Each structure stands twice: as C-alpha cells, then as structure tokens.
Amino acid sequence: MADQTRARIPDARVALSTASVYPENTEAAFEIAGRLGYDGVEVMVWTDPVSQDIDALNRLADQHGVPVLAVHAPCLLVTQRVWSTDPWRKLSRAREAAERLGASTVVVHPPFRWQRAYARRFVAGVWRMAEETDIRFAVENMYPWRYRDREMQAYAPGWDPTDEDYRHFTLDLSHTATSRTDTMAMLGRMGDRLGHVHIADGSGSGKDEHLVPGRGRQPCAEVLEHLAARGFDGHVVVEVNTRRATSSVQREADLAEALAFTRLHLASPVGHAPGAGVRRGRRGRKATARWGADWESR
Image 1: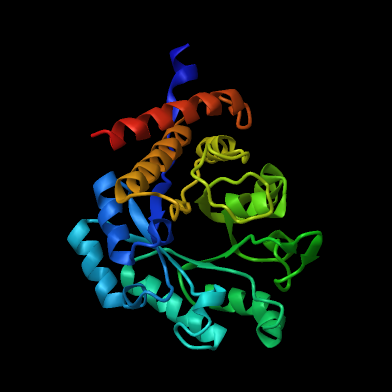
Image 2 (image 1 turned 135 degrees about the horizontal axis):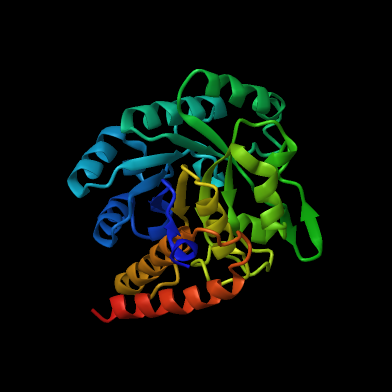
C-alpha cells in the first residue's frame, strides 16, 4: 500500500513567466519569483527595455537567485519592432540571449499569415537553427482568431504545430482552451517532442484568458500528473493573466496559488493512472485556493 502512494516527482522545474506580473515590469517578476520560491523565470521579450537587455537580466538573476530558464522570442503583435523587424534576426537574438543567460529553451510562435516569406521557410528554418545549438526551439500551439461568428486563420503554416514536423513543442493550456482543442489529444500528438509547458487555464470562451490553473475548464491537473508519470524533464511555466488584480498583494496571492497547484499535481503518486485525477484535481483546486488565501492574509 505504501508503494502505491509514494510520490513520483519529475525533474521539471516550475518557472514564472515575466508576462504574468503585467502591468508590473520584468524586474518585479524576478523579485516575485524569488520571494514565492519559483525555480526560475521565463523572460517574455517585449517592449520593457529590461526584457531586451541581457546584461540587466543576468544582474537580476544573480540579485534574486532566480535563473532564467527560458526566453520567449518577441513574436507578439506589440513586439514587431523589438530586436529588429526581421523575424529570423529575432530568433537569432533570442538564441543568443538564451545561451548567454544559461537558459535551455526559446519559445517561438508560428508566423503570422502576412509574414509570407518567413512562413514559407519557417519549418525548415527552425530545424536549421535547432541543429546549430543545444537550445531547444519549442514551437507553441496557438488558436484561430474569432470575431462574433467569424473565424480567421491568423497563423501559417497553422496554429496547431503538431500538423508540422518540429523538433520541440510548447504546450499552452490557455491556447488549447481558446482553440477549443482536446488538450490531452494534443499532448499525445506532441509525445516525446514536448519540451516546454505553459500552465494556465481557460473557460473555452474563445478569448485567450490565461486563468490561474484550476479556475477554468482545462485538464490542468491531468496534464501535470501525466507529465509526472512520464518523468518530464522540461520546464513548466506559470503564464497567467493578473491584470485584474486589485493590488500587488492579490497578484502575488494568485501567483502563489498557481505555483502551489502546479507543484501539487506534479507530485503524482506511483501507480496513479494519468488522466484519473479529475476528482483529485477538484480537491487540489480547493487546497491551493485555501493556500493562496492564507498567504494573502499574512
């Protein structure tokens, strides 16, 4: 009986995306990650000058004892001019940043459809870049853009990276909610090429919500338990939206709850079948909510 309840904890480290503290800045993300006990950060390279400055990021990592585990290349609409307007130059600079920061992963989105030349060469180009370095280029699942009853395919070759032959994938659970994808089926298609996870939740409303895990309808607990059971050794990154937090205390409570939820479900009992944790996940949500409330009252 004791063997059946022994925890299997994978080598995966739990990181905080610097995007999770917005509208606070990159420096605040390092401070919060260190204070809450995250294993590291994923730097979202965007318009904040510090996020683009490798020397500044190294200083923050040393100051707060929080390593940079991943770099999210500037692939968003608001970062079209960050690190050049040339998308290949952006990826080269992201790789350089990862190498100098000691990170193991560069997260990259598929091209926008209007980036036609980039999109045509994207799959082969990412393979070529991946073969030139030990850094993982992990292509992230996205979603179709929707407006009322209309749907637009904004990404090329497509928003589902499992339709293409990439070496590594990033699984984002808010994006699976937005695309209304079967998350466990996508996880299965990614297989051993899954190198990186953005843990978040969503209600399936069609909006990219990035809820704290356990507050939506995604199988967050089930995914984490599956990763634990298979000995996943990539990074699990909390990438949630805390813009509506009414104070920095509430923001940190949300991020503490997300960390507690993630660590709880990464400790999967040996012999526990992945996918059988839905009821246990509900208990986990209550437990982490209580933990967050206790932290907020400190």
